[in-house]
Image (tube, rainbow, N blue to C red; front, side, top):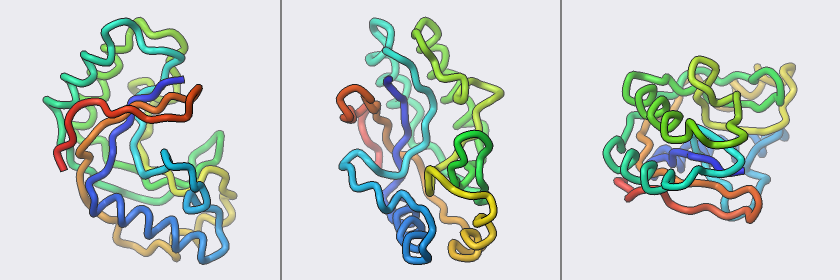
Length: 173
């Protein structure tokens, strides 16, 4: 599996990591416990089994032209299905356009993940991967009412087979 992910500005990255730490300190599930070097706050735009030929160059040009993109965080919720605890991200016009453009680049990719498809995608930053809906109220209390703000300033691709990340484009932050 290969992904296209947006990476947070330093301030937003630090705020999300601090939220992970507060959840862990409260005894709740948290991505703070994932110590793999690739673990960092990010927004996934797409995932596919493999990228088609030429996709990396096209994605690089695309993100270089589009970034930075504002990151407006909204409510904390538990998503249906795999039950991650997330901070929803307001898609906004810029983020929606970038997402659609990424999907056009990957139109011929095998095994695209339908969770990220336009009109189905719920943009978010993950806080915990396995979370009980019953603990959502406590999580919201631990995290507070004011979500952090920032930007998405870089893009990367995660390779699930090698558990490595590769930059896409030039970081702006």
